[in-house]
Length: 444
Image 1 (cartoon, rainbow, N blue to C red):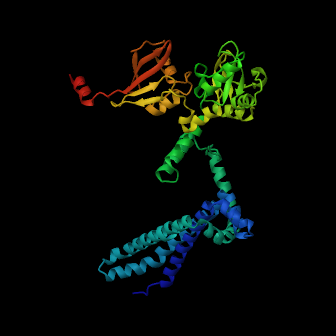
Image 2 (image 1 turned 90 degrees about the vertical axis):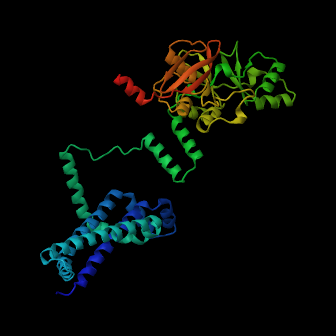
C-alpha cells in the first residue's frame, strides 16, 4: 500500500481555503456600506479608497473574482481525484470493498468530499463572515483584490469581448431593463415588514407615497359642495361668523356663490387685523390661488403648492368649472390617512363595519381607498374618483334608494340619496356558490 499523500491533501485544502478567501472578499467588498467606507477614506485610509473604487465597477471586479474561483474549483477537483483517488481506493480494499470497485469508489468519495468542503469551507462560511463584517473584511482584502484585478485584467477583457460577440450573434442586447417596478418595490416593503426591518405603519406610509404619483388631484381634493367660504361682499360681522364656524386656516372667497372662487383668505392675517381694531377689506387682504386641472397628478400639484404663496389650489375641470380645492393637508391625508383634528364636528367616517360584517360606505370615499378596503381591481384609466362615481359608472344612471348590483364578489346597495347625490352604500360580501352543488346540478 502506498503512503497516503498528505502533501497533496494539504494542497487541496489550501486551494479550498483560497476559494473561500475569494468568495469572502467578493461579497464583503460588494455589500460593504459605501457611507462607512467613505468615512474611513476621509480619515486617510487608502484601503477604503481602493474598496470604494472596486465596488464602483462591480461588473469588472466580479468577473475578476469569478475567474479565480472557477480556476481554483477546476484545479481542486481534478487534482484531488488524480492524487487522492487511488490512495483512498487502496484503503477501501483493506476495509473489505472489492478491488474491482475500490478504485472508482475512492475517486467518487474524494470528489464528494472535495465538493462538500468547497461548498462549506469555500463558499457558505466565508460568505456568512462577509455579511457579518463586510467593512472590516473589505478594508483588509481591498489591496490584494486590486492586485488580482490588475493581473487578471487581460483575461477579463478577453472574456468580456467574447461574451459580447456571442450575444451579438444571438441578437441579444447586453443592456437590460433592471428598473424596479412598483409591484416589486411593494414586495420589498412587505418582506422588510415581515422581517422587522420596518414597521407596518412605515410600510403603509411608503405605499401611500408610491400611490400618490398615480392619483389625480380630483381624487384627493375637497369637493366644491363641502367647502367653507365667505363672500367677497361680506360684512365684517359675516366675516367673523364665517371664521368662527370654520376650523380651517384658509377660507376661499367667492363671488356670486361658491361656483366662482376669486381668492383665498388667510384666517390668521384676518384675525390679526380684527384684534388690532383695523377695518378688514376682503378684496385687499385676499390672495390669489393657483388654478390646476382636475387630471393633474398629485406630485405635480404638490410642486405647485410648494411654489405658491397660498397653500391652496383651485381644481377646475376641462370646461373651466370649479370642482373643488386641494391643500397640502389633502395630500398628506392621502399618504397617512385622515386626522381627527382635521375633521369637522358631525363628519361621518368614510367606512363603518357593522356587526354582520357588512360595510357602510360613504359615497365620497376615494376610489383608491374603496379598492384597497375591498381588495378590488379598478381600471387605471377610470373616469370616477369616488365610491359614488364607481356606482354611477356601473349603473350608467342616477340610482334610486334600494338599487343594487354585484361586482367582484361584493354586493353594493344604495341605501341613502341626498337629492341626486349618492350619500351611503351598503357593501356586503357575496358568498361563493358551493362547488359540490354546482357539480350536482351539472350532473343532473
